[in-house]
Amino acid sequence: MPIPSEYQLASLDFDKFMVDARDMAGLATTNMAWNMVVGVLHTFRRRLDVNDAIRFAHVLPPVLRAIFVADWDTDEPPLPFGDRATMTREVQSLRVAHNFAPDTAIHDVAMALRRHVNEEDFDRMLASLPQGAVDFWHV
Image (tube, rainbow, N blue to C red; front, side, top):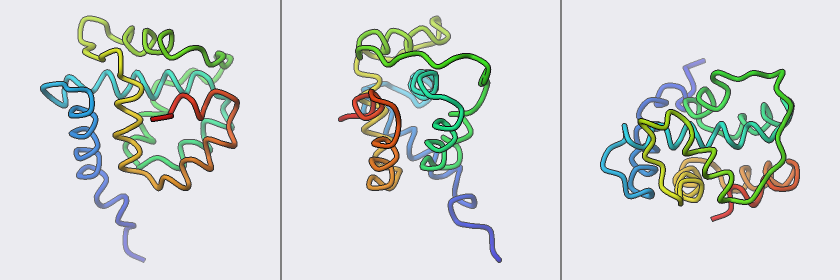
């Protein structure tokens, strides 16, 4: 069996996603978008238990899936979903000196992500997660 194309093309697809995230946020470079993307994914992950987070990861493209689970303290209890402004400040708190995430960061990453996932599967997954998950990724 050949290597599945989602893995063969993972780097190219990730580069396309990063360009979309950069453009949605109005940032100058994908390097500037990096901490925003990591911050959004990890902010969301902190609100899920391990089982829900792994199920969510399955709907992500391979590189985003890896970023989503990277540096994870699975013993940390899930946080409640809060309002968008509070969660955006959490996104912006990641590596502050190198974080260019705008106040629209969660929305911007959500817009970019939706271009790179099967939206039907993505929305079905979100609906199965705790209350707040759908709103987090709402565009």
